[in-house]
Length: 355
Image (cartoon, rainbow, N blue to C red; front, side, top):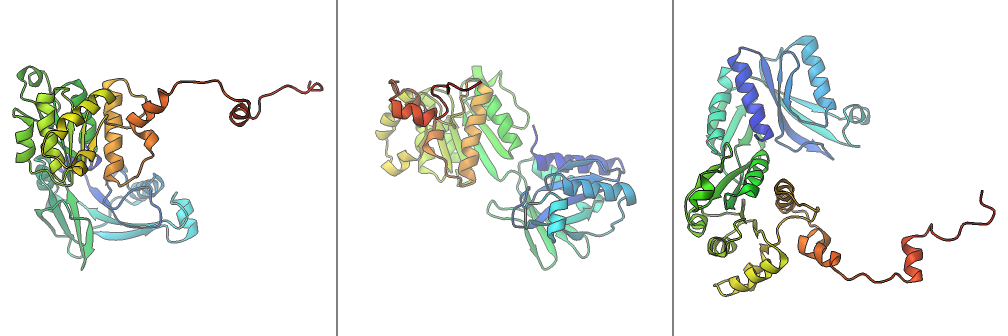
């Protein structure tokens, strides 16, 4: 599974190799609400075929209609704005007051798409600098704190995995987690020193490393854009790695297991040189409570929690697995009459004259 940006670059590269005219469309700026974030991309071919998206669909429809009518006529990049008036915002499906600015760039061999794709496929972070006046393109190393920028007529966009996910354990759940995380633009690394697990584990584009997990956590120089998830159920592999991860700047550190096992894990970790503040950073049981049972559902639950934390979204305690199950496990008691009226206001005797 590829991320959307990677699909866009691959399609553009293929179409250029086939000699087909195409344009790269990038969201440069938004005002008000917008269906797609700054930096979102799509590529449109001369016949109106598109990969990726820059809105909820209506702007794509307009771009497709124009290309099908006139073909690709631009010879230089151009900034285009949609949704300036209320009528336009309504027409293009933008929320009230929403405005979106796009950079539309005709692609050629000089656009550096193939070179950019090569870097991205190597999990390298790259800054692509497009001169909107001359159309010239320059590729330079990117940094994790860089963002899309338009200054002095040069549009700088960041490409490549800006987030990392270290998965400890090469089991079945790890495969689903790695596949979905790759689609979310994580650079995924799986660590498992157990040969019997590594030999049968395979996800395209995911690196599997034979090392002790705690050593790898140190070697990776975990930063604030990295998540560490332990999935082995083996304290000999998980605990030391979690200890090192909790000392790092990782934005998420979690381990799979029941509430009982999680409590035991915390007691074991207390014996290490960890502060109470560091120990509180440990997520477990991991994931959001969505009633997940299968490995695929559990993977979605875990990545939903990572996404919320990554986006600085504060979730209610009831979404936490431990809290949700604590409520579910409360002993039932008969409802009082007042509670019945509150919960079931429409219940009661039927009127004698009801037909």
